[in-house]
Image (cartoon, rainbow, N blue to C red):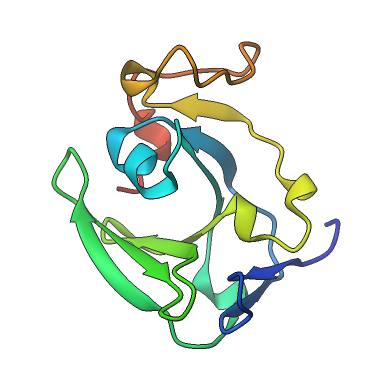
Amino acid sequence: MSGAFIGGCACGAIRYEISAEPLAMTDCQCRHCQQRSGTGHGSYITFPSRQAVKLRGEARHWDIAADNGNVKTHGFCPNCGTPVHLTFSAAPDRFAIHAASLDDPGRYKPQAVVFTASGHAWDRIDPALPNFEGMPPSEDPA
């Protein structure tokens, strides 16, 4: 392990430290991620267990149903609005963070791109990454 993943929101009201290796580092081009990020995709690091997550501060939450009907719960800072983390009803122990919320965003190393069917030509993501029109069945936490 290369050390804990540490980060939080822009104003510092929410902080996390995750002492686990991630399951996946993924760029998602679904329409929800585009709207939430204000750009062509969202970048996420997903961890296998909430037990490895130390979270300080109170996030506000909102839910959205994925294409398959399962609920994704998004946690964001009520002060600065920074999106910080999300959880999944279909995989309740998994915990994902927004890559840009890391203190060292350079630790993010995307491994795949999902929902490319919703992607835009102007959102240039590394063409060498494996890509999927939707969510690969083995990775689908939503």
